[in-house]
Amino acid sequence: MPLASIPFKSPAAFDLPSAVSEPIREARQDEAAHAALELLSQLDAGDAMAIAFVDARGGMRLEAVYGATPDAERALREWNWDLEAALSSQDAFGKAVLEAHPVLFMGDLHRDDTGPLAPSFKAYLLGHASQAALGFLYAYPLPGPADKAVGALIIHRTLAAGPLNHDQPAIVQAIALLLGEAATL
Image: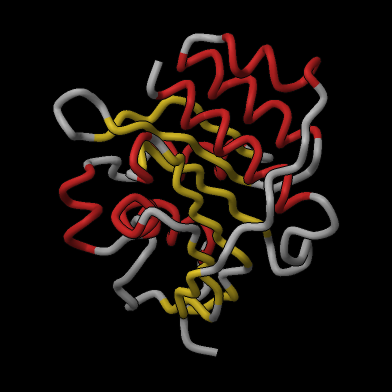
C-alpha cells in the first residue's frame, strides 16, 4: 500500500478523572507535556511519541519525547521541528498544525520516498531495509483559540501493535485538548 495521509475526525474527548487531568491542566507547559507522555506511555498508546508547541516567534519547540527504545527517542529528537520547513514539506507534524485536525499516516515506506517523515524517523523505521511498513503514525493538533493549532502530538504505533483502539483515541483527544489549554496559558 502506498504511503497515505488520512485526515480523520477525533472521537469526543474521554472524560478523564480529575486526578489525571488536573496535574496536566495546572502544570507549566513543559511539565504538562512530560506528564501527558507519561500517561500515554502507561496506556501503551505508542512506541514513539513527541509533543511540540508553536513558540512566540511562530516556530516550533520540541517539548517532550517518549521512545520505547533509545533509537525511537533519538529519531524523534532529531526530527526537524522547524515549523516553516515542516509546513512547506508537508511532514506529519506540519500537516497537523497547518490543517488543525488529526491526520493518520500509514502504508509502505521506501528508502527513496520523500514525504511526511523526517529523515531521522524514516531511517529508524527502515533500519537496513529498503522498505518497511510504516505502521500507524498519528499527528494530533493541539487546539488553541479560534481552532488554531498551538502544537501537535505525534504518536507512532508499529503494525504489530495495530491502530489506537478501544478508549485510546478518546483519551488521546482529551490529552490533546489539555495540552492546547496548557499552551495558551
